[in-house]
Image 1 (tube, rainbow, N blue to C red):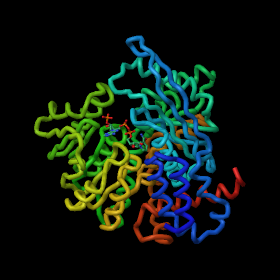
Image 2: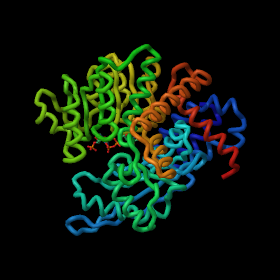
Image 3: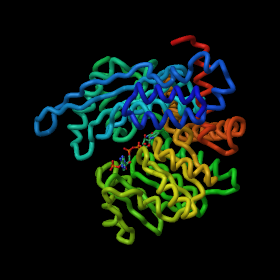
Image 4: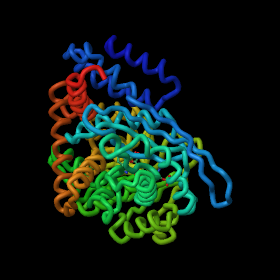
Length: 453
Ligand code: NDP
C-alpha cells in the first residue's frame, strides 16, 4: 500500500484494537482506493478517508428483558451511524450471538459504499444486538424487540436514521419494533423498512437482496455471453437472502443443489425445485426448523453436519458452476476458494456481507473468476428499502412489477458503474475495485461540498 494509505490503516488498527472484522473491511477498501487517493489531492487535503473510518456516532446500550421463565436477561444493543453524507443513516439490524462492536462497524462501513452505489439518497449505518432469537418463543422475541426499541427510538427517525432487517431480524421482528416505536412516539412513520405490506411495506422488499444478487450476477455472466440456464449452483444459508436467491435461480433455469444453516448443509443432486423450496420456506419461516429436516422430507438428499475445528467448509468443495455465499462473514476462506476454483466454478457472487476472506478474494481475482463483492451484489435489499421510503413519504404503494423493474435497473446501473470504474482506475473486470471506487467518489464529493462535519 502507498505510504498515505498505509499510515491510515495503522491508525485504524491502533485506535480500534481487536476489531478484526472492521480492520478487514477497511483494509480491502483502502487497497482499492490507492489510485484514487494518489490521483486526487483534494481527497487527501480534506482527509476524506480519515473521516470515513470514524463513525459519526456510535451508540451502545443495555437491553433488559424477561424470558418465559420470568428470569431477567441482559443483552447489548448497538447502532453505528457511520455516514450521513448522502442521506439519512440506513442499514439493517442484526440479532445474533456473535454481534459485537467490530462486526457492527465493519457492516456500517461497508453499508456506506453500498448505499452510495444505489444512487439513492441514503447514508450508511448498522445496528443490532447479541440477542440470540434461536429457540425463543414469539413472546420472548416480542419482549426483547420492545425493550430494544425503547432505547433505540430516540436515535432514529424517518429523516435521520431508518433501520431494516439483517440476520435474525425479519418481518416478525420489524413488526414488533415498529409497534413499539409507534406506541412510544405516537407516530405512524416510515422509521423502519421491511414492514408488512398492509402497514407501509413495499412489494419485493423481502425478495430484493436475493433477486438483486441474481440480476447483478446475470449481468456478470452476460459479459461472457453466458446465462443461468442449466448452471449448477451452490447457495449457503437458508434465510431471507438464500431462499430468494434460490427462487430467482430456479426461475432462470439454474439448478441449486445446496442450502445450509449454522449446524450443517444439505446436498440435493437432483436440484431444489419450486416445491422443495416452498417446503424450506415454510420450514424456516413458519416452523423455524433446521435445514437437517430437509432429508426427512427428501431422503435422496444428503445432510452434512458442521465438523468442529475444520479448516474448510465442505459445502464449497461441491462441484458447481456458480457459488452464492448467503449466510455470514468469512464463510469462504482461501482453502474454500481454491476448492471452488479447482472444481471449475466460473462465478462467485456474494449475498452475505464480506463472506470471503481477503486471501480468498485474491485467489478469485487472480484466476479470473467472475467475482461479485457484496457491496455491489447485495445492494438490492437496501435499494428497495430506499424505494419503500419513497413510497412511505408519498403514501403510495407501487405494484410488484414496478418495484421489480426499478430493482433490475438499479442493479444494472451498479454493474455498469463497477465495470466503468475498474476499467478506468484498476484492472478490467475487477468488481471489487470498481465498487469501492464508485461508492467512495460519490460520498467523498458530498463530504467536500458539506464542509468539515
Ligand atoms: P437470516 O437470518 O434470514 O438468515 C441467515 C442464514 O445464515 C441462516 O440460515 C443462518 O443459519 C445462517 N448463518 C448465520 N450465521 C451463521 C454462521 N455464523 N455460520 C453459519 N451459518 C450462519 O439473514 P439474512 O438472509 O437476512 O442475511 C444473510 C446475509 O446477507 C448476512 O450477511 C446479511 O448481512 C446479508 N444481507 C442481508 C440483507 C437483507 O436484506 N436481509 C441485505 C444485504 C445483506 P442459523 O439459522 O443456523 O443461524
